[in-house]
Image (cartoon, rainbow, N blue to C red; front, side, top):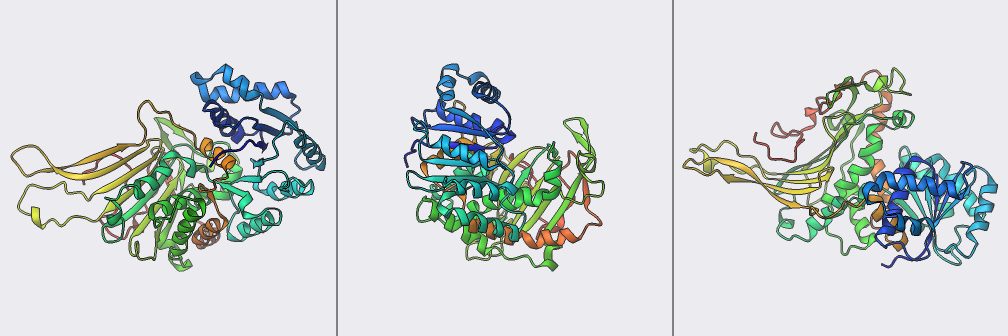
Length: 493
């Protein structure tokens, strides 16, 4: 697909997401010569800034991210694309002036609206854009990018979708999950479907269980108000981790086009066995971090954080067990966990194969006889490792675990931020890495029974010390031989 010149209209352009991600990503696309000639970036904000003040602010944003790679010459080219539109997004006047600005000849009529704003503002902003006929595709395409959360539960997600679909058709909506833009996440698809030696083993006959972990060593920072109403299950499991699950377990799509890819992901979500409310405690667990130590420094517990009520039972750790009731995966448990203030920051997918029969080695010194693992490191370490058992050198029959490493990136290759990929895909009209509404809907159906059960259980929540790997939740596991894997290096048990 070829990217066409467009006007990127960024609502909330002076906010944190724009500062840390969007503007640096657009700059790096210009560095890579991937922004089509004539592309313009129109920032909308309430602050009373003039054009020069906006250019100075963007320069600071880009320098903070690019550091030694900042190129003044390229930034001059990039700054020629930048415009600032002051306005209050709750006022009609903001949109009438915006319509007048976008009608000027220097702005391409292909327009992408990036709503980096509160989900509560999606509806009113779309309504006023629609009133100015800014979604009409008479002279070019119109696309709208929205950030998660896509609702608070199934009912609110459906209500939000109903409002969005009043103004836009599904092809115009780009629900962004930055996790899907990470290079290693995309590499999961290549790893699975471009290497024929693994595909025959990728099923219930050979795989014992799958683990998906997203751990963070940081706390909630200044997000207390948002986080206390969301919690770990909504913030990570319902969105990012369920998406990883679909990529690891889906059937090969007929092609890499957006609809084929998303069709297979939805089939996985539809096949996940519903969790009845009476089974929630057997299949889900929650916890909240207490005081502890991170990197040798004392840190507060969750209840001591800013804007957190003293009696809050919001979970900062959530884990759950799922089963996919289809031919390939029936009976294989999939364990997922996420948490704040855990021992280290790491996102990984760990696939454990069935244990080999030991009778062959019964009269030998073989003791370290681990099952084979496939380990996919997402961040910060991006890697693919296959663990195998090999004989140790020497006269005795002793074994050890060795790993085959397939590095995702060579040492001379730079990391690309997920937003660079995703912002470019919007220009190209490629929706492969964006969520279709039925993906959002079925993901909410999976977690809703857990959320509803936890919502009425406000008397107690388990705690874990900051800097640990979370609360004791071993009851999730189907077998005594199964436990959380927290390392991407060989373990001998």
